Image (cartoon, rainbow, N blue to C red; front, side, top):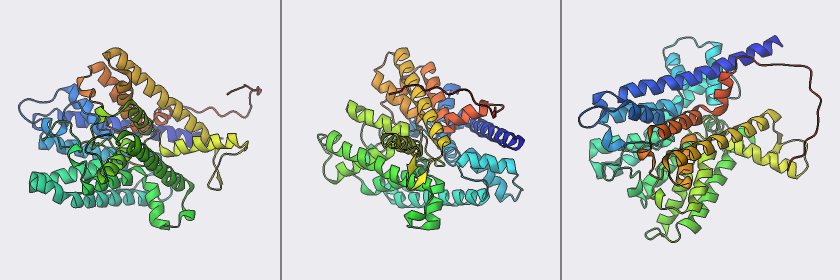
Length: 449
């Protein structure tokens, strides 16, 4: 019993370390963005603007109050990119990587913290996993930048084009959604590349690569295309991700983009796929979100809340959470005593955690949207969209964020932070002890449904 108590106490400590590391990264980024050298033109950014931007960057969200390309200098953009990289890989991952390469010894507590940070199934092999994450991230980001560089160089010149290619490659892989294309039109994102196959496909591949999780990629590297050998989590991630990309893309193709002038043929296919992929925490857009119908915005809100996969650069309540809830419902419908998936039984703790995460995200989403709508007097759909974008760490916007008051921005900051570190991480971090009782209270049935 004492052993279990000590193990759980270490987990609580690990969760506190994760939260504090993200908070410290945000504060450091805020200070750097407040320097005069970070802002384009005279003066310096105020604390509120710098703090919001730093939170959005570290939490790889992409919501901004100023256009990144025009408001921030090259130094400021570099600071933002650094925060995106650290936030996407995870502050703990970066710290462990630095310690590892400096050949310092990694203790059990640090390994346990790393395990919780990347949602690894066990402590064993965590250092090898850290090296894999670092190498994989840098290789994919460099490859993405190299592919897009010729396009951006032709558009913006060699130096600025190379910078744009690197910036958008890192931002896409980390599912951040920050862009520096606003020199043409502020807050334009990638709308000037709606019909460009190379940019669309490269960005989508980067988003998916960062969003399916490092554990899934390790499984793919180890077992190649032998799907039956994959871990249960990897199977769930791959199948759920494919469904969440395909179905919304078909909806957008046949419903939303069927009547928009200029979107036809291959362009319509690209636009449908891109918006389906990016909605799940990436935050780029190749069409104007403000012009979409209410039905499409509602679908996007659901996708933003779901987000990416565990141990990835993406946020949201996670694909595995949705899958566990879905197979639980199927088990109830089929009158099964166990929750089953791919010939395996899912632990009941996973079901409880999935239900808790769902309720937490729904509460935060509803609270954020209703608060902003009441406080600002704005349409509820736009406010729900912004709240979902923040809690899902997506970054897509209907355009209302720059005009919000400090109170509403504060709500979005809280949602972004909770969405990145995870609601259960915050709950576990607040816990100091765990109660383990051998006795049980009397059971009594309650009718539901």
